[in-house]
Amino acid sequence: MNRRLNVCRSRAGFAALAFLVASAVHATPGIKVQEEAANDGPIKYTVKMTSKTFGNEQETRTIRSGQTDDFTWQSAAPGGAQAVPDDCPNAAGLARNAEGKAVRQVQIRFAAVVADNGSANVQLSFQARAPKGTNKVMVSGKALQCPVENRLSQIVRFTMPTTGSTKTVTLNDGTQLTVSASRK
Image 1 (cartoon, helix red, strand yellow):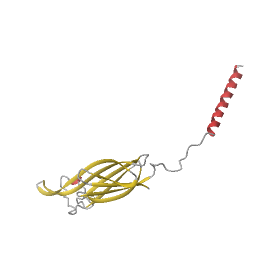
Image 2: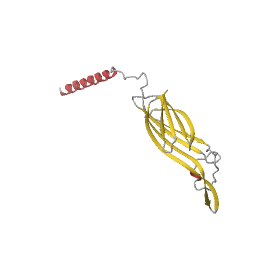
Image 3: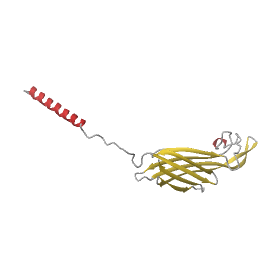
Image 4: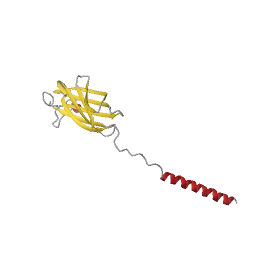
């Protein structure tokens, strides 16, 4: 009799399991998103720099919310690219072009996260170097004219709309960055 009871229990267990599996098969399907949410999709942004020290440049690029984007501008200094003797103590740390001459260089890292309301929280890292004359340096008894650099490193954070309007930030040295962002 015990054996018959155990068989009945196991059949009841199998029936319940089969019912659960059948119920799961007929469950409501997952929700499919038909359109992108407000903070998805590409962001087309433009950074325009106006600077007495680092020059005037502009770049338009595309990223997605939550990504970072790095780019570099390089140009000759107002007086032209400066020769850099290899023996200068600071030669390895200078921004140089393919010919080894000192030039202006700006590196920007742009990161934006778009909130549910469509505005972007932006972090912009700005690092720039530019030659500003020379210093006479003695190396191994030899007089060299080595470039002196202006440097600026600053991080700015701000919120802006992604409707194409602009936001201007002024850095510590007076350099102005005008940023616009729009959804593609």
